[in-house]
Length: 280
Image (cartoon, rainbow, N blue to C red; front, top):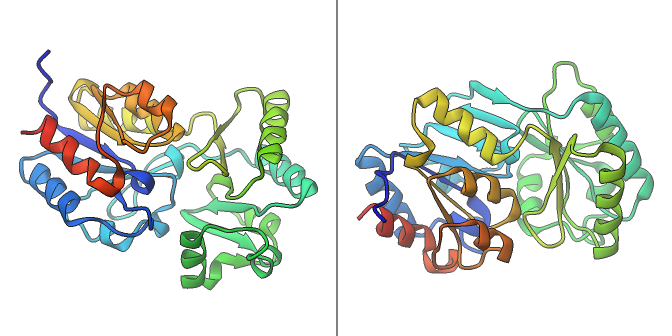
């Protein structure tokens, strides 16, 4: 079967474009994206991160014009203009934070206005709470992200509440939270994982797939001419929506099952491999 001409590539960061250190963009991947952009292909970052936490090596790529962040809660252009937003409604965010704080025993991060926030109490207990190293690096670099109260930060006037992230959960904690979410909110809250131990909570309208489709409508590009690459269950929607969905060799089994093609791992320049395969 002949593949359609690719006009846009949507690429996840952690576990996909970046190495396992969550920071390094390999030269092979950089060159492959640069070659595609030189041919007129739009390159779009689609990540669970906020724009403020996107790796500097990625932000420095001059051809990037659009960013889908916080699992599709926010789509912005390079100048920071909001093109699409699907924030958590404040009443739902309030109930989530109240319930999760009451459970205790795990860290809670609030993503608001394209920044990640952590309570001072969790920060001071960070070693015991197993915060991911790349999260710690982001928090260390911006101490304004450490706040006395997530509740107070949530109620800052005019805030976009993109996501509540639970970066480290024990299996029984994760199962209990997912069961409560389903019982209490049905499909009003979307819960996805980007790592085995985490859970990321957004509004139902926030997904990489929905955000990618909306961006392509704005750009007048058919989804058949889109290639999307990812590794986790928050990538499944965009892999299914794209004309060519590519899962990484290190992707979750369910993500690979949703893809048209499986490339090499993120440690083996799988993004470059896929671009060479579909944009020869």
